[in-house]
Length: 212
Length: 374
Image (cartoon, rainbow over all chains, first blue to last red):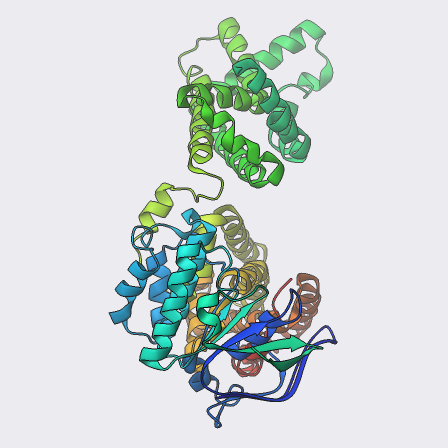
């Protein structure tokens, strides 16, 4: 469970988000809202990428601020518009994520072929198309022993087949490993995953439940 | 087709180069021309005919020395480096993306010929100089060594043309497959080393210039203050200056981390691991300076001066976590610089070693409160 307590995030004293209290139990969540409403800011705060006021607590006792290592080992993040060093190869990035997230190599080969990255994995990232880069970023988000995987706009720049594959992979991962997901998008979710999702939205700078 | 394309590219690239790089051109060729053509021999007492003759002899005398040939080669390499940097910048512009799907429809040999024409115009000052050398060689000497001058220009123009053609045919975003990148391709690159590899792959010249400046200042400082030989304040001042020169490189690394390695803040690293990463990065960054300290200062001062250098580097890292923009960063470090100079001159320089533990403590406090650089 992820719990927000007196959560606030401002940029240059301009309040972007204010969540007095909100709980997310296990499951797959679709975080919706138009551009610029604060979806990425919220996900980056949960992932520990940016500072904020208040608390985010995992499983009732792992506070992001007072227990940053334990929290980060249980939460992964896939960025909306990945930017990786162009002189590294896909394999280099996987190695960095495996080391950083203390992941095991056993699923990597499967993930590589699943994402269709096999023939690109030893190429430099500067030679990747935006779709390939997105797939690499999504692959990296699945590495490690995380309980929560935050996917920021995961379907943009992916082709239809890749979107379908990713949905299957999310459902499979949740069923097999019990992973929980927060998937943000400013568009409607693909129909295949809608029935498995609980929907939350950022409205009036706070988080609300939305009837599916 | 070819003549028309060449005309467009000369207007788009060659003329633009002259417009943008006038300062650099004046610096490089202005110095040469002013020394060879505009000095007044014998105090200006020669008549016009004798003066021209004297200049040509002077030019020939310079050009027929092997050392001048080597200097000419170095000069053209620097010039070519500048041209390549200019081309890379130009090819990234949105307005020039048409080059990636227009000229490369031609056969490679024809593309190289067109670009050769473009770069011949860009190298016109060097070609003009070589024409003068040949004229003088025909008139007053012989051509044996002089023949290498046009060969150097031809090879450099041809090399840059081939380089541009290869990049254009590989696509706009493809990184260069240089000898350097091939050499380092299979070396494992841990997270801490990536901003340093970025210098190697993308900002070699900037990195080398700052390192050169830092080392020249250290050696120059030792010569300048040789009368005060043994005064530890001189060592401290030189170390402080070397650290300050490196502030821009530390800033560049932080900016790169904020843009390309932001994902690493999601890694479950202990504060000791994070310190280890930053420490390893700073030690490698300061390796040339540490070597200079080891070689030119007394060996007994090596450890305290190294701690001093790394401590100031660590303070830069902490400041960059909170500053958010380069102007604020430099305002603070200039204040730090003058404060540190006063401490050193007052004989309290060794207190600056405290920068090391202070930076470690502050880094722990601010690491997760990072304000990304704009």
